[in-house]
Image (cartoon, rainbow, N blue to C red; front, side):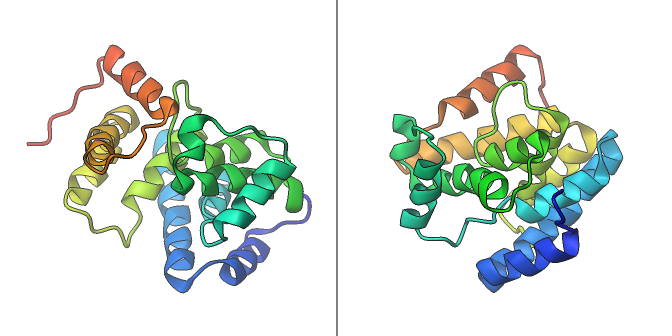
Amino acid sequence: MNGWTDEKIIELIRSKLELRRFQHSLNVAESARYLAEKYGGDADKAYTAGLLHDVMKNSSPEEQLGVITEAGIELLPEERANKKLWHAIAGAEYIRSVMGIDDKEIYKAVRYHTTGRAKMTLLEKIVYLADYISAERNYKDVDVMRRLCDESMEKAALYALEFGIPDLVKRGSVIHPDSLDLYNELVIGGNRYDIN
């Protein structure tokens, strides 16, 4: 990985992130390792992707947009309208362009950890879900989400979307088409869950 060890990555994110976000990144890395071990993924790569998933989260919108623009990425209207999505796009590009880590799996896991997408790879699912179940998370149904992650990644992803999409609607926020594509794929695939 171009000389980047997990120890060096930890030092980098410690310097780039607020303490709370740094701790979250460490927790997501641990959750990603757990899910990778459970579902037959590459635990080391999952840990690294978890460390990196929010590398640009505390950077200013201007800095995030600068990384995106420099990479020649044209934001979708839904992305332009929601700056909270920029850190994932900018983070993936930062990892590739600035850090020189040219691992397509890690790139995509960081890129899609916020929205998800249809046809996600195992590593993408792992980081997407690890972000929901990391140790410091304490939202209303986090215990249900953790249980579903132990049962089925697809059921857990569907639950996450059914939790998140109505919240975006209530707040009048745009819904990224990748999230809708993932939702539709999971529903068509019959991934229902029982939370009782």
